Length: 100
Image (tube, rainbow, N blue to C red; front, top):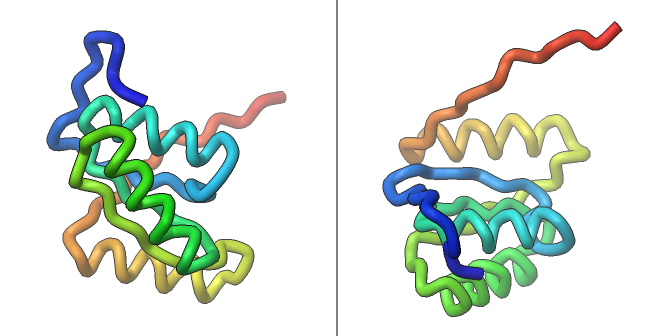
């Protein structure tokens, strides 16, 4: 997908989990099409590599990277976060709202 609106995400880095399929894949493609530097996260090394290659080709955006982690395993979540931050990534969290 390419950016068909006015949103320009050039220079922004966005990490998407579950990005090898479904809504995660569509989200990663759409954001990459808007110029974002993407970090694609999935559980399967081959699927992550294929997803990165396909999104690069489809969007023309070379700034797509892949990381492998099974987020159902707490130690993998911690490893992903550590690897991401050691490579210069930052996390931004929205405040969680409690709904009555």
